[in-house]
Length: 98
Image (tube, rainbow, N blue to C red; front, side, top):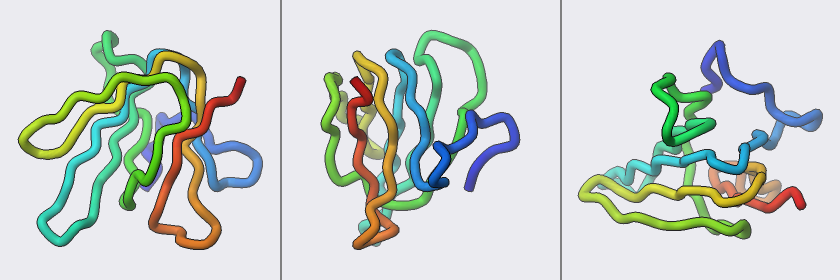
């Protein structure tokens, strides 16, 4: 689900642009599903840019990972994009854009 104020997905509609300091908060459900909440900047006091239901499979961009009791936080260190996988639309990958 894309929030009204979210940065629009890329032209193909299957990827979201993530700025260098973006954070992805991944909430893990008991059934194995995940909710990905995207923030453009972890330091900004702003609402999330987007929320996506699905599983984050891999992060192929420079980042830090922090575990929490309800999931984990991915702190990006370079611009990237969150891409929906064609073979399994419930899975996403973070790829560097550089």
